[in-house]
Length: 340
Image (cartoon, rainbow, N blue to C red; front, side):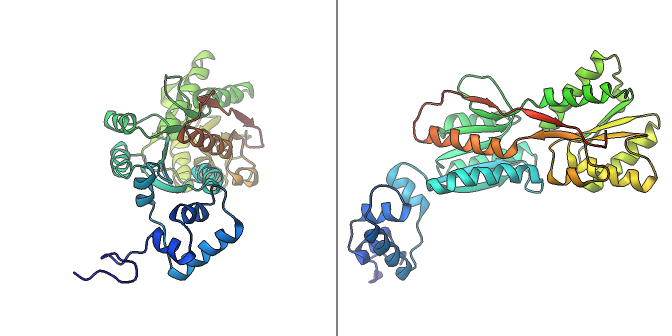
C-alpha cells in the first residue's frame, strides 16, 4: 500500500512531527508551544501555531496520553444536564481546568446507577487524567471501577469522611433540617415534604424528618415523593396533589426550586394565598427564586464554589501534590423571602 507522501503515514493523519517540521522546531517544542506550557520563545510559539493552522492540524488527545502517560482529558459525571444547578458546577470546573490545558468530557447519568456504570466503564478505558463524580450513591461495580482505575477522583455536592476519599460539597441533611426548623419557628405545624427521588433529595428528607420528629410533628403521610424528573410542571402537579390529599397543611418544603416554582404558579391559579394559607419553600436558590411571586424562601448552596474547589483539588491530585483538606464543606445558607 502506498504511503501518504505528505506526512509519511498510511492513514494520512497529520502528526505533531509534521507541525514541528513545518515550523522548523523540535517535536517537544511544538508540543509545548501548542499546549502553552514550559518556556517557549514567543516567536517560536507564533511559528508553531502558524504551521498548525496551515496544516489544519488537530491534536490527538489519546496519542498524547499514550506518549506522555498523562491525559489532558477530565471526565465529569452529573445526574442531569437539564437542571441549572449542575450547570453552575460545570461552569466553575471549566473555568479552572481549561486554562490549565485540560479538556472536559461530560457524561449524563440520568440518575441511573446502571448508566453511570456504563459511562465509567467506557470513559475510564480511555485513561482520563482525572474524574469528578456526583455524590456517593452508586452500585458496587461502579465503585470498583473507580477504585481500581488509578485515576484521581473527586466527589461533589455530598460529603463523606472516609480514608482516601476526596469530596467537596455541603451537608444536605443538615440543610433540610434547617429549613424544616425555620418553618416550625414560623408557627407552621402541618409541614409537608415534596420531592423527586434522588440521593441528595433523600438526604434533605432525612433532615426534615429529624426536625419534625424532634418537634413532635412528624406525620409520614405528609411526604410526597415522585420518580418523575423534576420540572416546574411536576411541581404544580404535586402541589395540587398534596393539597387535595391534606387540605390542612400549612407549609410545604420542596426538595428543589423547580418544584417550588411550579407550586407557586399552581397556588396562584388556585387562589391559594402564599404564605398566608400555605408557606412554600425550596432548595438551591436558583436565580429565578428571587423573582417569583412571592419571592421564594430557599436554601442557597454555593455550587460555583463547589465546582471551583473540586477542580482545584483534582488538579492537585493529577499533579501528584498533597491535598491537606480532602473533605471540603462549603456550607449553605437559609435565604428567607416572602413565600415562607
